[in-house]
Amino acid sequence: MTWEALTTMGVLLAALIVLIGTRHAPDVILMAAVSVLTVLGVLTPAEALTGLSNEGVVTIAVLFAVAAGLRETGAMRWVGHALLGRPRSLLSAQLRIMLPSGVMSAFMNNTPLVAIMMPVVGDWAKRNRFAASKLLIPLSYASILGGACTLIGTSTNLVVNGWLMQEAGCRGLAMFELARVGLPCAAIGMVFLIVCGKWLLPDRRPPISAQDDPRSYTVETMVQAGGPLDGKTIEQAGLRSLPGLYLMEIERGAETIPAVAPSEILHGNDRLVFVGIVDSVVDLHKIHGLVPAADQVFKLDSPRSRRALVEAVVSDSCPMVGRTVREGRFRTRYNAVVVAVARSGRRVHGRIGDIVLQAGDTLLLEALPSFISQQRNSRDFYLVSQVQDSQPLRHERAPVALGILALMVLSVATGLLSMLQAAMLAAGLMLATRCCTVSAVRRSIDWQVLLAIAASIGLGKAMQTTGLAASMMHPLVALSGRGPHAALAILYGLSMLLAAAIGAKAAAVLMLPLAFAAAGELAVAFMPFAMCVLFACSTTLATPIGYPTNLMIYGPGGYRFSDYLRLGAPISLLLWVVTVWLVPKVWAF
Image 1 (tube, one colour):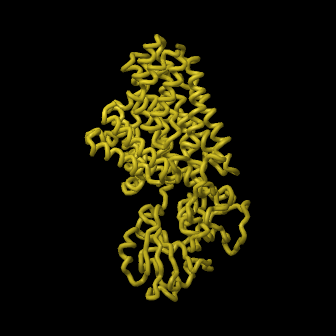
Image 2 (image 1 turned 45 degrees about the vertical axis):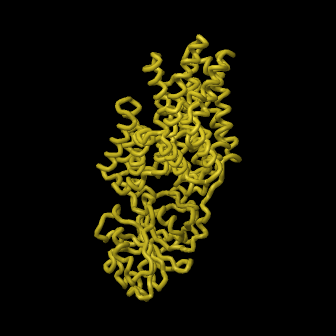
């Protein structure tokens, strides 16, 4: 083994130890490993950066823009409500995520599926008071297992299929040929996840709960007449038990309804009075069918889609102190509208326009982002800051965004466009139809995920160019004399380990030539060996760096490297046994 191969092995082992034993971000660790190999001359700069030009990495980046369009229009919330509903238990929630995700990933590449569904599941988990860490691994694993059932379910399957036709001269795989092994594997993996996930999935929640936030806002909203909530009950509208938010009362004409029951039917122009923390007020602001109760909001001289929520603390020198919001002509003075008020953690009674402002009151305003730069140094406010992700949603464009998503999926499923081409077209249409803005697209790109995937591709390149990967495969050839079944089991195990370390597609490309050589030595058919490589690589569950969807959920789920090992390793071992037993029955030696 050359010094370059030994160096690569040492750097890889060090990176894996740091990933497993610490909480440092995976992108930092993996990029550091690539940097060390580049400085030592093991990788050329071009080889180190090859992951940044990889089609899969670029596709994921473009899909973040597609997801931004779905999120900004509220289409994601609609999809989540339609598919996921309101579960009564964690088990029910996991089933509602895994079954649709597994089915959809068979007909849609699982990477874009997770990119689109991840924000939906995160928001849904928050609204139903579940830890996102209990739901995001089931989402990723279900999409991986479902994607292994068809030719187009994962790009790894397409990579293997292309190699079979170009390098081995074999026929291409049929659309559903993989299902005879993929479906049993998916069923076994999902059953294990449901049965054992209760104990093996971590319960990670933010260190500060909603109840710890000292700012308790009073906010009024109105049910849009003829809108999607008009005629629904409180529970059907999803307004019951909102995290960090409490529906105090409903004002209906001259009548006030306190202690609102879940069965209470909403009517158009009902005025709903909520008390809650700022994050929950932002969520309330995005529910389709609710509009701000303050009429002044609609008199601002800019479209709502360009505005955001801003927090401002009233100073003792503010001319509004001692006056009501209406008397002080707040909108005229500041070109902003008060939508909620917090005062010393207690509820402020009365309608927003009738509240007499005091020094120290925290106001939640709807205004242009320029309000911050204009008022940051003003003596009227002690502190001014924008609330993150608080722009009103473009609900009227939700059908357009869903249509663009459907066009993207159909164009890929029919073979009209590649995944990258379809994603680029969809992202361009999202911007052209104003489903999202350029700034929203920029904010939506998760550079941590992209850099981690690109770095893992660079490490795979190092293993390939130094001969380390080939050296790791020699035991297979040595043991192949024990018979094809033994060789098949060893091949699957090595493919599984390599995919967990360097990524599914890189491992598949490295292992296929060895599978071809092993089949030749044993004078048996090549297809069983190729299929073992395919399933071992396309069902990589045991590490976050083994598959892009696992990396995508790493940060949002608050996961650690060991979480994947604890749950993914047992499933991988089960799939190892099942696949090695089933593959020769479907593709004979």
